[in-house]
Length: 607
Image (cartoon, one colour):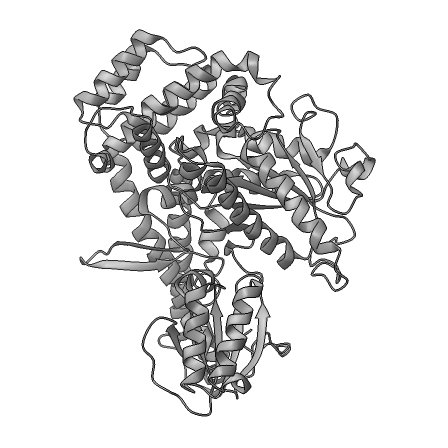
């Protein structure tokens, strides 16, 4: 795209000789931000970059690369820019396919202003997703969980959200250039997305020059991957629990967004850091527990000090030695080596300092809020399916922010096989005493009680996708409560990870035998049947969570992929990446919409 839609040269950069301007909108800025740093834009010949809605001055004899969403306001702005001849030529890249009416607007607008000759190329890039790591993407679609579970949402709104999710997933598959086998549990948003995506892929495959005809970029492109689609209600606990591993902690406590975060620096003021695949420490240690990370930082610091001492020792010369020519040659060689090793040492020191700073801030929060105790007790609850009442209330009256206590209380509700009314009331009273908005707690409690009464009726009406209330309550936490005992076994494997492992293995398994199968390449009549190639085993999987995902699930799936023999590849994606707090806020809003909760201001729950 930055090479004016020509193939890039062997080094992977665009032609530097051609200076160009990059114009994007807010949505596409978020797509670019984790992928390319500002300093790298220069390598591709980009000298200036602007948001599309800013006022811009004309720049003569320079091509402009636009990367924007195909929406009315952007089309109007492009037509205005072209008619004012702001730039010499326009290379238009849209994040997904441009609807026909908008394309006609673009054509007629540039024709009328006699500027159509300036439009050099129009490309549909199919990039409506944010790639945060090689195996992690987000569609950046806000509050999907809230919108899908909103009791007042009409069919039309639900269909629109499903269509947006399908469009984003289609972009991911088009970029990977693979048509997967799709699996999902029956009922609820997961089935709606799966069947709509199946239809979209079928329609697209009918055209001769489709996006999937060139073969995949996956390592073993002759074997198709499996796409497993889940709805957040499949396992609510993973979105709410506290976690003690480095990556989830950094995200949950410090608010990692688009691979960037800001933390207080040692000398006051805020320091901004990037945490992505260019940071070797982050890549290697993201999945370790926090105490192990602290040890690892210490080890790397000691190794660094040793290496610096070694360089100093070699270049310091031998005190009192006779000076002769040979020593000079040896010394010069050492000096050359020292000079060459300096950039690498400096870079290592920066990485160590960065993580020391982040870990120090994390440690402060862990101590202040007793986060280690929350993690331990929540895991115990999930393992045992309950907790001693005194212990439960002690946590709610102890350390921790209001949001920590609320998350703990909701985890308690999810983990209990049956809700003890007196205990639940005591928990609620403890929350109210701490001035915590209980609407999220009551919402989960209500779904859970409805869920218990609906399980018997559930199987008969499983196929009725139109009845939204049934989808909300019928499929909701049943999957969670059913497997609560083995949700987090001693090695803490999530239900999601266990299910994905079973789907990839493709052996008969009662947990997944009822899962639906869609094969967009098969004739419609046979889709959903059990032909052998649909069953696996699969070397590659794309796992997609509707309604918000997190680094806990991402880490768990990456561990699964690494420990398989031979090693497999699992990509994890979601509608948006949420911290526990952000997800609970959506639950609170749902509670309010259902008239639940005490009237404490919702904002106070976050402090």
